[in-house]
Image (cartoon, rainbow, N blue to C red; front, side):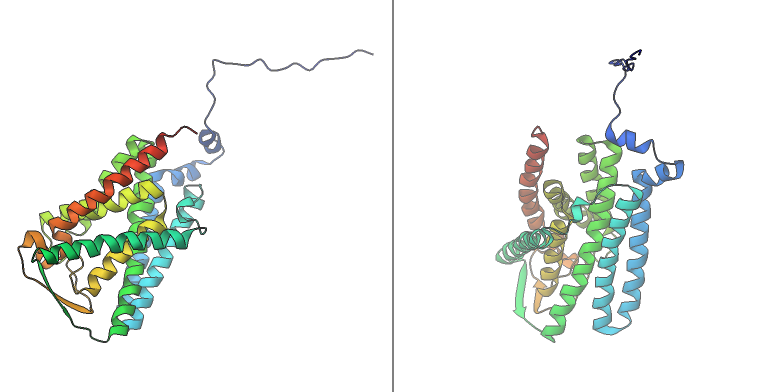
Length: 303
């Protein structure tokens, strides 16, 4: 009997190995590759969220307080679902930034940071003579419920649009490292620009929003890579600002306190609210820099 030996393939060290992602992409159709392109899934996701959220807000606002709350919350829920769908079905990746495990802890930590930030800002502005505060509740239960419901929805929608979709798409397009910095800068500028149409907005208020909101939440996302965390920051910030009777990016909502700007606009923020004050800009930078440094240390650790 003759024994045969199977021929082993000769190693080809001159041929570079394909990355796992590249190997995975080769099995996709042209249509699937089109939808897996970052700019494609980001635009689809953002458009879907904005359209559905606008519909819920417009319908809910015509149904009184309860309708407004339900509409805003539903908009936030849809934003989360759209993000999951886009990432799973189009981008074809997992969604660790919206992991259910630890979501409550991350959200509460974000709320603590956001509350500390806005309370410190209001406190310092008041001490500098920028605000006059007085207790002025009107239907306190309804006011608190409205502040919680509206701002939960707003925080979910805006953070998923800017940090969940836009930030990660830009980062993916330009690659890790450089892409992260480009994503931080672009989303921060767009976030500030998106608020330029609000009542009382100025060029300065847009720049201030870019720094204190865009950079702060962008830095928080770079650090934690968790959307529940940045949603918590955004929610606490807006809800407390509104309950204090301060205009939230130019918009005034029912409040528990009556706050009147009594000092220079540079300190009080004027008609736009405390977000146009130099005080939160400085505080936000003091918070953002350590988070960015922590994010850089984490990514530089060899695995």
